[in-house]
Structure formats: structure tokens, C-alpha cells
Image (cartoon, rainbow, N blue to C red; front, side, top):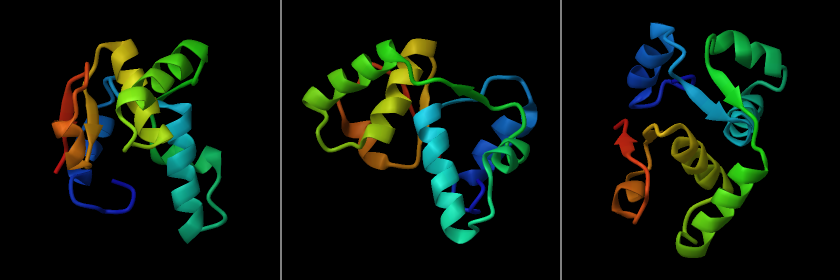
Length: 116
């Protein structure tokens, strides 16, 4: 959404709805901030919070870390960020949104929502 990539409009609609239904793990928040800082080093965490009002940033705690590590046993082709997202979706009982089509082919215990 922040980089105007395909599928970003769906993310924008969810964020703009302001229903407190959008959550992201602290690991993925870090990934977003890191990517934005590549293009604009002045981007701050507070600036990202302003760009994504109402998005809940969920701490990456020990139970989530353990679940992400479990995913690594059978899903070696996905990153720590991907596994953090999946662990959060599992915790919340919510679908994990992604633009990465390979997720739809993996044996996962969470619902996957492809945004493009």
C-alpha cells in the first residue's frame, strides 16, 4: 500500500475502515520501516505510525517466536518475517494477507488471503 504496489488498494481499504481489524507483528513492522527507510532515510517509526493509523503492532513474544520456529521445520522456504506473520495470524485466528503466491501452496494451519 505504502509503495503503491498491486494489491495495496485492498490493504488501504482495510486500514481506512478503522475497525481495529488490522494487526501486524513487530517483526513485520520492522520490515516495513526498513523498506521505507531505504527510499527515505528520514522515515521514522512515528512517521510510519502516522501513515498507518489504527494498525495494531503486536509484540513478537516468546510464544509467537516458538510458533514461528515450528513453521521453520516444515517451511524452510519462507523467511522469519513470513513466519512471524503466520504466527500472528494463528494467534489471532485471522487470515494472513500476502502478495506471495507460494503461501497458497504451502501446508499451513492458517487461512491465507492473497491480495493480488
